[in-house]
Amino acid sequence: MHFWGNLIGNQLVWFCAVAGAGRGLYWPALVAAAAYVLSQLLLSPHPAVDLKLIALAIGCGLVVDGVAGASGLVVYAAGNAERGLAPVWILALWASFAMTLTVSFAALQRRWLLAVLVGLLLAPLAYVSAARGFSSLTFATPAWQGIAVLGIGWALALPLLATCARRWQPARRGDPVETGETR
Image (cartoon, rainbow, N blue to C red; front, side):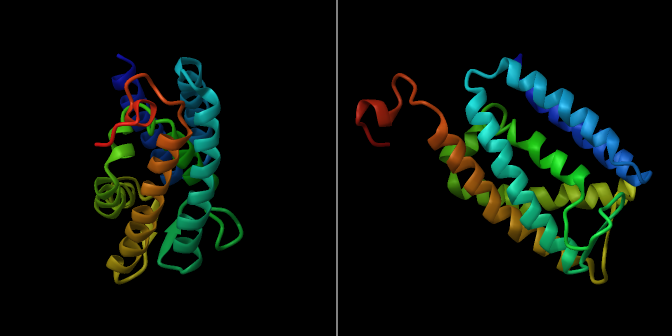
């Protein structure tokens, strides 16, 4: 049940964030993300790990979405006044996504190439959906350049986040690290 709550909860945060941003509001993302993150921290066996992942994810968001915004290739609705800063609603999404790295996206922890591919191909689709369905961001023409910047950024950030999620969690019984086995 926790797997599905983690996955669906993250999607609900995404919906609140992009729907709110499309209307020029950033607070729906903050409220939804705060409720989701708090609920997940209460269920987490290692909340300190999740808090470190949130901090790292927000740092990744500042870089990835900051570069995309500063380049002018992506323009965020409900954005910050200063160009080059990732808007707070996007950072709320990064924080929420961090909560999936030890639960619903835990499989990425041991599959580096899959993390790269998910970052490169699937993450930009969320931005395209947000742009087309909710007008929460726009891409400069040609749109593929902004999509490529986001894809490359996520292809670098997601393996980093997944690796940290794996390394920061205490070893579990039977893990190769604990038993000395290799896989």
